[in-house]
Image (cartoon, rainbow, N blue to C red; front, side, top):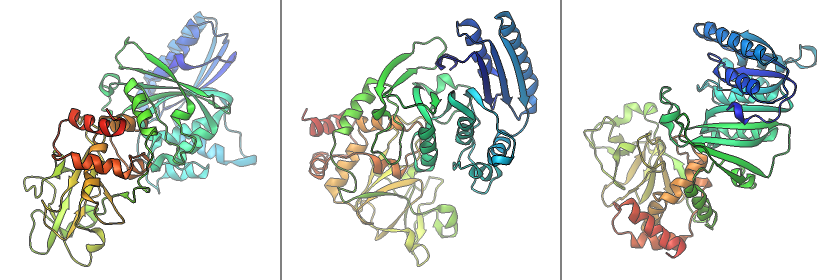
Length: 465
């Protein structure tokens, strides 16, 4: 991370918010001391709330002090054991008559990851300075960039979840309007880089510069995450990272040849869900709100209720009485608004486990296999439909093959580094036209085909080979 920084001023004002034991600041200091950077002074400001770590943080700063002294660089540091979000939001919100917030030339960040509720103190503090976000780590980054001077540099390591999804759209707009991306680095293996951290999603390291024109190209690098392993680097046009006409401002991060090929394939597709006359929605049944209406087994007056656990090799296995989840929901005036009429539906999991090979996992609900007039889709599913009703069968089967193909999975991973698949993400994809999807659907007679067979079928219809 420390090696990502560009040219530095002679006097560097460094911010490390969420400093932990100070390892990132130490890496930056080591890089400055060992390189011919022209830096003569480093003034480090560090924030850390965990009192148990403060001793180790102070010890690390003393080592940095010694390292700088040997390199004839002046080093000073200030450690704040206060809440960075609360303190800096207040400083930034004080206006003309309050003390000026500090200004920094460089920031290096590994911010804490935690969801923040709408009525939390952190959310209110961030909102007061124009930051709307649902996670602590993006709140940290948004405040940090506000504290940088024009031309100031930020290197951060965060989850990739901000790269896509509706909840992070305000943050992406804020980030991209103030910072120019210079480099993105991804780890091909989640476990190698973060073996001890119980990381639930992939992480990204980024280098960005405040108030500078966005360059036409961005360096994308990747590594396994194992210490000393090779780093591969490729330059991509910025327009491939953030598509100019994308209102969602998704950030795509290609890291392999396969990802680049997937992008070329997807960019060549001509249809959208709207053009196909379809849409995708999140399952309507929020089980904890209708807990009294749920049933372990089907009984008189109930209809099927589907969860991800009912996925079974491309189709639905229902009921699944050995599952921990309910299998049925009462059909009455209270629950009917949350049900959909029976029909052929394509379902995808909203959350996939780290062990699943594909990020996108789709299956088909067949009304011939599960006899019912109404059906409930639980909130952990997405379902494709035509104005609230089922799909024409060959179209649904074609969509099933397309979404389960490797090319779509690789493309999706460009902008989604976590295991959540939002309906917004699925709406943003390009799709083959209706005729192509129906042709695929007519040819796929058995859903439980191997990955190679599905990929071959999709490739034949998209590329003619």
